[in-house]
Image (cartoon, rainbow, N blue to C red):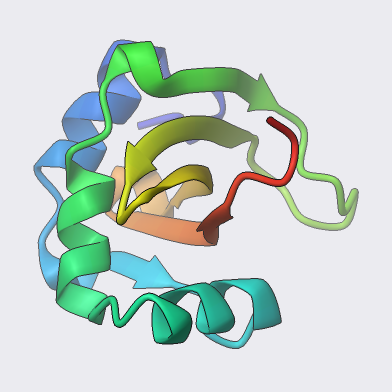
Length: 110
């Protein structure tokens, strides 16, 4: 599977069928960590939220990663959840077997 040429339908299918082990939330990013802690969101709840993304939540994508040294495009979603408008940035890697959640926090841009 060429993850660089996935369609939005394929992205949604991969994400919605990902197991907990296949979704990796980058908790070492301060905004993500603080958002989850401040709102008492468990990792399990966050992963369920990611699995609930749909086509209408797509804001942008695929777009190049803002770090040119990282390959594979990113997909940006905006979705209401946990009492906030959330900004979600994901990347699909490892031939569609891993979903990296780069960002999951309140949308600062709306």
